[in-house]
Image (cartoon, rainbow, N blue to C red):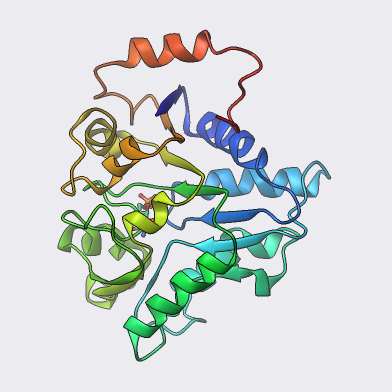
Length: 261
Ligand code: GLP
């Protein structure tokens, strides 16, 4: 796992955009995440497209998760969110942006279908991840099997409370979701997790320096051969080994870059 610490959330977004852009080419399969953390990275990528320095033509994009029961056009469905925050502003066809179908009355069938779509795509080249305050990624709450696949999950009350800010009230937050499993996410060739703000400091410490455990779903990154964590000083504030992470980045061989192994 490579841990990159930046002074500000803006600098996190610039580094994340650099790492992500290294994978963008026709035929690339890109794993996108919702939540507020990646929004600044999306803005930076949009800026690069508008400046003519980056093109998503010929790419496919796959979302991590979706609420169950929200109509696709609901402004808080992840289907709508990713289009509003990112994909409608770049040169990718809407039909090439995929997500689990939270409107399917048979969530099990929807989950299997999504796994099939991911498999048929040839696999995700780079997956952006945020992290929940309780260490969840996608919507894999604590106790999620480390080798789980796309399935229905019940949200943790903490996640319902955290996400209530996007809805009129906590009551309106759906309790059920479809999410790629930790095993599904781990199949991506490169995992890039972003974390900003003090509220994520415990989760970052647990995922990077705690045990590999279903209790901290994001710790599954420790088992992945190519994981990059990019966080600001506030999110890194509880890490014990920061001197080494900074030393490793300072002494990174120039040829190595961030995109490849
Ligand atoms: C939701 C999403 C996750 C996201 C998390 C944290 O639960 N399903 O993918 O990482 O929120 O969101 P934020 O970045 O807003 O803190």
